Image (cartoon, rainbow, N blue to C red; front, side):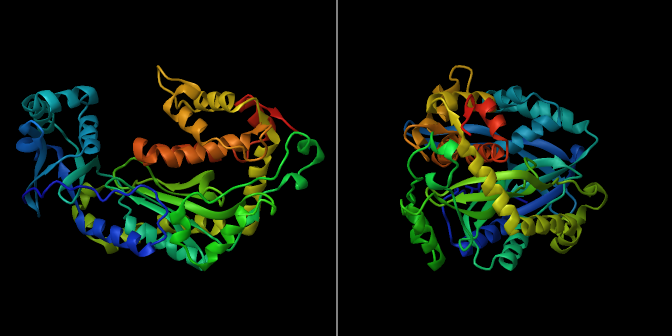
Length: 438
């Protein structure tokens, strides 16, 4: 088998794609490009390939390492490796990642010598996962394959059964991971305005919550049910509308479990909060080295993954139980009862607590801290900053930094912000350097 042209991943950041057809077509394209191989260590080797890169200074020729192996049914194979797969290979064979990267960049022959030495002496079997001719993962022989297409089908089918008017809010897909977000636009709870808060809290908070839908694509690609969201713009109607939904994802390269998490979607800014614990399933299955042909049969994988899909379906069912949604929104409202000294102080506390800073740039002076401050908008009052302001700014910043800093970090910010929803006001005040207002 010859190496295919290096695949340029069909990567999409998590924009507001309501087109479910486009999502499914992308998953089907991925499915057609997947090839998996069960390979013993001793059948692997590193070879080098001359590549040409056109630059402003002319043509740059360089060597790159390829992962090669002999396979019982596929024959002689060799594939380039993406960064994740190369790092996994180093980990599997006990080579320091930093050293492996330096050899790869500066001494590719030494890279091959090192890895070929250890491969010849290896005694394990690996699952090598490729996508469109590029190695994307080197995993253990016990890795359970959960196909993105099958998982998405299970989730979307179950959602439609529980919430027939539910819509695909967004999706993301690259060579490593898939994620999708679904919400129900026909079920909503309006957050309280100042008139509905307790007198004690109202002393500190003045003016109703206000908001606008900032992403024009969100409305343009919508359907009739989205008109309910426009009500969130009315400054006299009260607070923002919040909709129930879920966010789910899967990793094809061993970075994360297959998972489902409750999502709260805020109409005013299309922010989302991921709350509660993950309903997750580890990619741990049977020993593939004892039945290498099993990975070629989707029917077999589907049957073996029924336990995984059953847990996923249960998680979807729980998302759309009305009482659960009301409980989560009530917990969200609690964040409005915690005042923080200032935007800068609150961001300092959050960034330090979540370790989002760098050695040189800490707190509100870090890239993430600056992004949160840039997204800060008073949600309740121009006179008093609250924990709710901070959490809204954090999820807004997650959307802003996604393209520059990656979808994984953006989702982490949404998860960390959502983790504060459900904590007691006293906990929030202590964690964020604030004070309980009532």
